[in-house]
Image: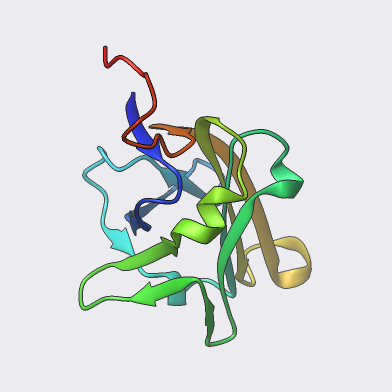
Length: 139
């Protein structure tokens, strides 16, 4: 895991959203190692990604809904979730996890809507900012 010290840097996460169809035609979010085509957040009626370390309800949510971006930057090729250092400082120390939540409008599904979410881990670990005079040893 990579250690990230809170209060020192913003965290910018590339949103490599990869989607394939399952056997029943419903979309399934794939991980970034897949060779499927990347999808922009604008493909979805709603896209949300919540970063958290402890309780998910205390996490930081970046979202896109109906043309409105909240904490997501529209890049030229990829979309990015941006967590500033003040937001990261509100999270407890620990392994950084995230929940992706998507909503799609499609006549393939009952009621014309598809709602999907999943929780995954990152390889990042949040810690408090260590001052130069702290007696911490590096591993």
